[in-house]
Length: 327
Image (cartoon, rainbow, N blue to C red; front, side):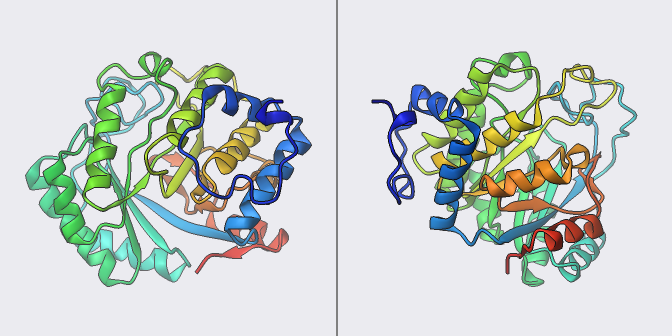
């Protein structure tokens, strides 16, 4: 009898495993939808308060002009998307944004820069931002592209809590999305971050034209890391005119919910973030994602350069569902 058809005893998936096979992950995806959500909800309840959602704010501290060719990204200099290259934001402005986010209820402040990798002089400024945000009493997260081990250690010394570096998709489909950075380079950066003692934020994007097997491969890769990412963002592609994926067929919302549920089951102790794409999701789809084990969102009008639901809309939805912000 296979994993997918065994009766699931209480606590069966609450102890993290790191030996998930693609066959086992595929069997989870293949479960009847009610059974999959039931299992995911059980795992969620055994590890988290199902009524709590971790709230984060994401700020683009350096927008546009990136030399990478990520097919989904409007910040790539290789595509004409109307996003203009900007210089690194000043410290005072970043801290003002962080204070506003904290006042609005954010627990974590995330800063993203459109770089292939940061230069050391850039890292000096980012470390000052991390120190300043930490001084406000917030968790800190940055995403800066590839890192060396030395750069990761510098960020740790500055007080960085989380580093975001997504795998994006499966190893097999990766080359259809990005050619300027290898999958192994992404894994190497994750290794540098982990070795420096920084928490890992790592997930992927679905709806990029991939097959189910690629969603399976992405989750299996994440769930087989020696230590699961503490935060796992699952993004729905936000289609932007001018990028190669602008005309990609939309993913069925229930397939997105399935991806959330499988991530929850296979990485029981991770915070699973319902990330990009919520602007176009119905309240019902988002509610199903929370039921399936998502327990983190970004709020604010933008995710780097793409639209995101406003704070009032998010708080109204959480209130309607009887949910609250994690403290």
